[in-house]
Length: 398
Ligand SMILES: *Cc1c(COP(=O)(O)O)cnc(C)c1O
Image (cartoon, rainbow, N blue to C red):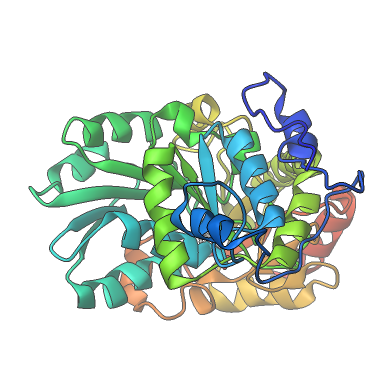
């Protein structure tokens, strides 16, 4: 197999890596990445089979843990994140599970932000707790609270920044310094920014996890995930995957490779539209408040602009009023999709209090700042004027 463009240290810019990193041509010299839909690989001899299984000879064995299309996706993402290696998984949730299973044991403790993705909090609080791994959740923005939550058995800080839906920013550099002083690993869910807007490993984090389902695909087609970092931290994740099997399919890896080729231009365009939409909403008489890191009014605007290359594509806002006013805006939309997914070229609209955050108690929701009038827009690639007109239809009726 002729190999090309495989060196992530070649000094290429991100948009070049997004198109070229991880390219490995077969004997047919195809230009677009080949899709290797095969569960297993054939050996030349019994001796080679033995050497491949033991790892003495590198090469493909079985697609639960080795597949050339998946490897191409892993190399491309690792190059973009500035990590030594990546391990692809079947979904974003299985990347978080694989990271935990690889690095923690019963009796260990996690400190995590209380504004994590809902399924991540459920994984920690409802499932890991049954296996003797305890989690303390703290305010995303309060570095002192993270430090105060550390116990002798704390093994991991887990954060996700900006948060969903309020776009609160965790200070990756400050939290990494606090954690590393106590030998604690730092993992960052980089789903919202992608490596185009934020590179947590450069800021001191040890591991990055992704829901590739979102912006890496970018067109709402497949599920996927990955864990990225130094090989010493990703090798145990690969060992877990080899044994437990929440593996990314070669087909999904191929779709993600194609999606990543346009990652830079999509993130820039969606981020630009999101900022313009946030500015328009902030000036709207029927809007009480806008949450967007790119706005000067965001409480952590300075930190966000230091840590990120843009505000991202998620804008949340509170309409004046409560649930019925928010729902009127949702139901007046003809263009925006009423769906919880994000990261798509199609703009989506969600009422968090009755959907993504509907299963938590009203008191907990209020404490988390998720009001009944709050709406979340995941901005896609449609024209700004069309997005504005769609939202204006409902807003003008309030
Ligand atoms: C969607 C999402 C996940 C879970 O990813 P799946 O691919 O749906 O399993 C994890 N973290 C964040 C921030 C997400 O938005």
